[in-house]
Image 1: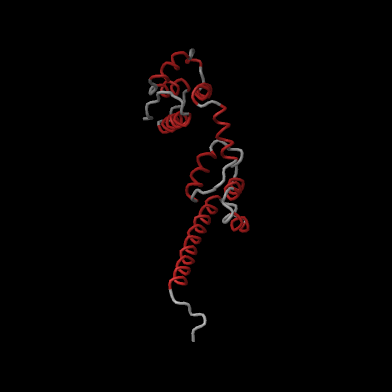
Image 2: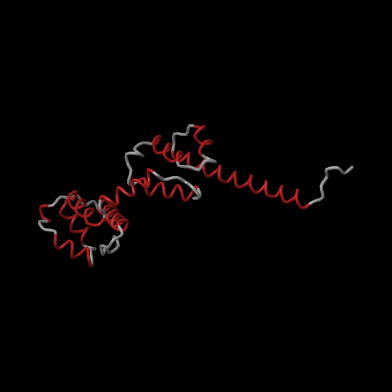
Length: 183
């Protein structure tokens, strides 16, 4: 069963709630709109319960209309546009590849047109990588998102190894006696 939904100001909680409800409805094979709506509001409490009581004519309501009203109330279009813009402007910056991938995945839900196919999704991911990795992956012309993620993770690990070797070399060079000029 989905968690209780109280309403509130966090639209991501609302989106998560509705996602849980839809998963449950699919798993128990509920097809009738009226039953979907009844089951969806079964776990409403506090503000959500008050809001739901203000909605009338549920017998005639379709599931799509319920979702539309729910999102209007708890996940306004302005917030969805804000998240869409965050996705379009997303760059790796100081994030690890894994952090960037996770943020990319969660925000991509709000820009489905940008990630409508594997090639576009991969291009957007690679374009947002930092300056050290992006050219290396761009040159490979990777078309599969999971492959781009895996290669970025491998590059990051390889860069860490190279940085560690370089640091060890600097320490050895600086700590030991100089071999220059001695015979």
